[in-house]
Structures are given as structure tokens and as C-alpha cells.
Length: 306
Image (cartoon, rainbow, N blue to C red; front, side, top):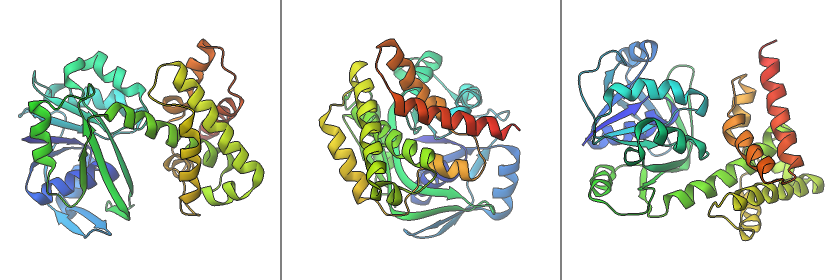
């Protein structure tokens, strides 16, 4: 199976590197600067699961000379449209697109652009970053990529993907309920990123303060209420489960959106929270915490422009 990884950053670089380490036919679609960096120093992964230094195949968008069976897309939501233009020349009638973005609205965007049959469901759980020297740094035991057909069928093509993903040093996990898993992750990330960006703190101090934990509960309730109304596979019973998960997290755990703010980078505010707020307005659901979270993120983004 010929696999194209869009970008060689924290997520694409890590999972693509693990596939390449195993011996799969992997190519990275990169920008000119990243191409030169990797050509000079290799694709270097520093991981609790073992360090590797690879010399992968690299391609620029304008160098369209091959087609691919599978394209793995791990960009931020605000780079999605540019990424879609980048991969367009590489997509054939049989190409599968596996997006690893958080949230859910990107699925509709990709389906509208490339067609329903091309788009798989996917997500990942991993704590990783791209260091200033270009190294991919992966720091926690969890390094899971979950994938499947959005309709839950175990098709012949998904069996081929399962085979390509098997026996790597990362956990590639097949799911016949991938859309449910994507919605559940969306709920959790909305809760975690909403609270940590609003309060500018790791999760530990937030949950230790009584009013902080009450805020976590209210955020979870608002998100679940909106998701239920639009037919997502979530229910009120998930609120307690999500709060239990929050209690079990490391004291210093931060959301990736909070880390982006600390670096002065854009956020995925619209992808996560405006999407929910639009549906809340359509169904006349009061969401004061979600509105405050979104306002906070938009003010932050406004200040980036000053």
C-alpha cells in the first residue's frame, strides 16, 4: 500500500515515521523548508517508545508523479483548506483519505470536496510536539491512532489498511464505531481545551477549586446537550464519565489548544466552539460557558493581530 502523509510535523511525522520504520511504502508531502531540513538531518523522532532517525521519501505539491492508496491528513483545522488543495493532485478514484483532526466538521468539508467514499474516520491520542530543531518529540506512553469506515463496515479496503498498520511500534487501532469515538473525543477535547484556555491553567488547579470543577461540569453539560440535539451518539451519562477522566489526568496536563496560545499561535476556536454555538443557537439552547470560552479565544486571536 502506497501511503502519503501530509506534513512531517508532530503527528504526521510520528505515525508516518513508525510506519516507515516498519517498512511500509511511506512518502511525506512537505513544504520546501521542511524538505531541506529532513534531507539534511533526517526525520528524527525522540520517543519514550524508542528514538529513530529516518531518511524518508519526500514530495512537494508541485512534484505530482505518483498516486496513493491512502492519504493521512493531520493538519490543524485552520490549515484544512490549504491541505485539501495540496492533496488534490494525488487523489485517484480509489484513494482513501484518513483525517486525524480533532472535532467533527472537517468530515463534511472533506466529503463535499472529494466525495463520500473517499473519506474514512479517524482520530489519535498522543502527546507530541515538533521541537525548534525539527525533531518530533513524543513524551507519554499513549500513542494511539484509531481508524475505520464511517459506516462501520469492515470492507476489503479497510482490511488492507489494517494490514498496513499492523505490527508497528505505535498503536494503530481499528474501530467499527469510529464516528462514535470521534464524537466522544470531541466532547472530551472541548471540555479540556475550553476550561484550560479560559482559565489559563493546567487541569490540576482547575479541578481542585470548587468553582473550577463546577465550571467543568457546566461545560460538559452544555456540550452534551448541544451534541444530543444534533443527533450525535452521546448521552447525559457521559458527563460523569468525562469528569472522572478529568480527575484521573496528570496535575500539569494542558490541552494542545492552551499550548498553542502559550506559543502565540492561532487556535481552532471556530472548528471546536463556533460549530457548537451555531447549533445551540439553531436549537435555542443556552450555552453561557461555551459563549465565554469562544469569546476568550477570539479576544486572544484579536490580540495576536495588534
